[in-house]
Image (tube, rainbow, N blue to C red; front, side, top):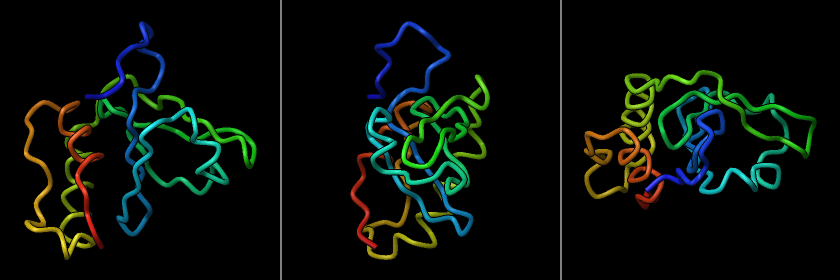
Length: 118
């Protein structure tokens, strides 16, 4: 399940799903290492945290972190992005259907841990 150990709802929850403009998706399981995985903040097109809230990448090159762009989940947008990714890029996935969890946090966690071989 997502990392909800922080008492502050102002901090992004792990994991994070990142999307490129073409719909390709990447997963960051631990946002604490985002600066090791993301070179530049302006290279992040769209991102969501483990609770489905939109994220914004910030910081100088090599020191990228994520902050909440909104405290409200963007469930419909996130599910649409994930659905498109599975249809367009997950051609060798057994079902090409994303996880079907109804709870948004469980959905994000399942997507982050679903092995998709492109």
